[in-house]
Length: 368
Image (cartoon, rainbow, N blue to C red; front, side, top):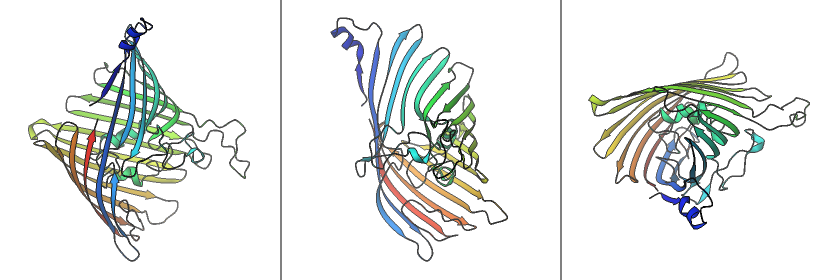
């Protein structure tokens, strides 16, 4: 149960020190799973693990807002990723560059750390937040971008995905969100700063990197009844080669077919002279108190020159059984295949070039 701390009561106790109402909530998710993954070929490995975030990323957060009157509000959001299988946290990044990565295992508000001001004009948000180009990858995949074996292969394989400093979030960002009363249209614009000074250079060189870590992105979408479509694009500047990511996602709910939700994404990116492309198609089918979900994704890396293009494909099938509104049991099967020298594998395993990887996962998710 979410814990609401109503600041109005505190105001009353303080003889009316504040006139407007406000609230603070504690929230979170704990998700753990028993996972087995295996690779193929000589030198491959297999592994049993107790993993976290197989269905939904584990987290602990605090959020609140204050009604300022006249339709205006001030809000904050602090959210830390958790690895509840071992009690540690996730690292963050201070400047959207490799040099700003924090040490592993720290409890940081890496997922989101923002203060915002909102009203009829929309919302202005400052701090560390999701980049516009991340949203499609998360919202148009049945498995999202969690840590499970079914999670989005475009995100885990891509140049602008999991390992990129701005593949998910950007620090030092200024974001603007359109108001929700625009006839189904919505959107987001973000700029973020790498915060290098004007004389900054790459270590051991005279090459200026004063713009490294600067990000700019935009997301626009339209939602009408069962149909939702979103286009996003963004660029992070680096002296060694800019990172560009663009994607288009869409979904449709077929009410006449047991509320079947069909969804997909097309994805394009580049890092300097290296390109990557991918696509995903999936569905979520409610069945009683649970849901069946499946996805197929294909990602291709396009290196420089006339050389083979490493390609990875993944098929995932899962089932979620909701014991209550807050608690669910789930299971996932996944199969990954490599071609043209690709070596991707499901978490915990190693496979040979052009090999395959299989995985099984059973877990429990609890929200509060």
